Image (cartoon, rainbow, N blue to C red):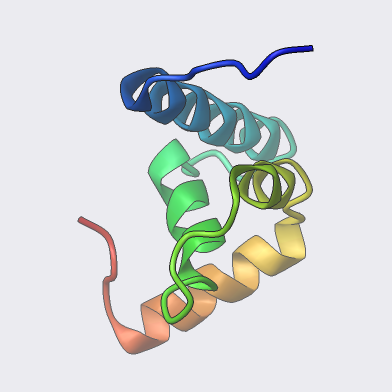
Length: 85
């Protein structure tokens, strides 16, 4: 099995699709205003000091994100003030 080259734009699109998919999952269970950007902010916030992790860890964090962790992040974000672009 050889090394597969992935360009940055494709990778960004794939990560964005994963975030949108997780947001859709949350919307289906009643969190109707969740966006892919919210998911990305939640997952990436824990790496603010360390930098972005290896891709496999980032993907795992997006796919395994639970509603409770997400809501804790959103509550703390609201308390601290807006962190979204």
